Image (cartoon, rainbow, N blue to C red):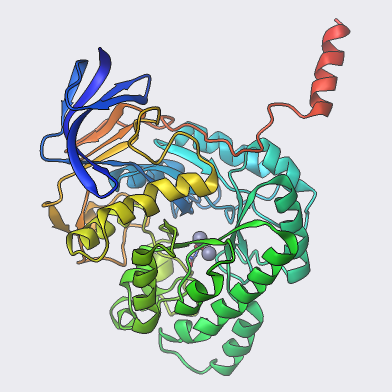
Length: 453
Ligand SMILES: NC(=O)N[C@@H](CC(=O)O)C(=O)O
Ligand SMILES: [Zn+2]
Ligand SMILES: [Zn+2]
């Protein structure tokens, strides 16, 4: 007898979809079988049960940027999109560069987040902080900016090399934003009289990412660090990293937005790396399908409408996307642009494996009961009015999506049709592999204090 049994759920095992029951106790999946008895039951007839998505790249802002997003609004938005775990990026204000800023963010996230979360540590010139942040439980290091993006925290090559050496030694993963700052500076000057919105794509051309990726590959060879390239956007990136032991992710916006969207969206289409031509987009879809792209991530980067609806040079870069990521990609499954199995691999299984998140990412006995329930026939038009990010807009206005009808986290139904049960603080902090409860020095101090009593 299990505390809760999900009945009649359609679960994807390898390439087969099987109708079964899921027995849940203590927040974990204990048994999967045809028929299971439970104290309570949840009828999932007609619905697919997919593992909750793990979005390894979000910017939930908060602190000094509450106007853009908070952990409450960001995590709520994630939940409505079937995302049950997020990893937050360090280019916040204040940036997550040291123990104090890490603790500050952690305290806010613990109080606010409705879903489970990891916190990444940033890399600044103060490299001594890296091992300390790792011990605090940072999930990974990054995104590390090779070029300026929101916040402007790019590091030079020497700092990056030293940082990667340390990250490698610690056994952590480095997540890299690969663009070439020097090339951007040059092109900014050359294109200074161009006022068209699409100039942003010209100022950060494919060569920018390619140069940076080549540099990153050299650094992997030197430092042997576990490297993950985030939000890749070019055909050549996929080709270059083949066989190099580097993992990567792609965003829905690089798969679904084209150069032609500049006309419709203006500066709302501005993000880094920028939107590209069909040649790159087609290669990204190929990478999605042949498995050379490991992960799907949103790079949820909320900015207010007021900030975005201005000229392209002054508007900040970034688009919200945590809530639309799975709906857009489930619609892509519906349209046969990728298989359901591939989507699950990219959105749940691979993120957990690459970032070392134990017990998540699969519908399997022993795993957390993080489950989204989906009616594949419920295609809906996406509109900002229905979304929950503080940003209040979406670059995917008018696109079609398939939103989850219910979402469960560790066995608790947090969203069910129109009912929303999640509360702030429901989310657990997921510690990275380097977490240590006390430093040896702290332990000695503690013991000394005790014996003195
Ligand atoms: N992607 C973006 O254009 N912006 C991100 C930063 C980043 O991921 O580079 C942001 O934090 O706004
Ligand atoms: Zn980035
Ligand atoms: Zn980002």
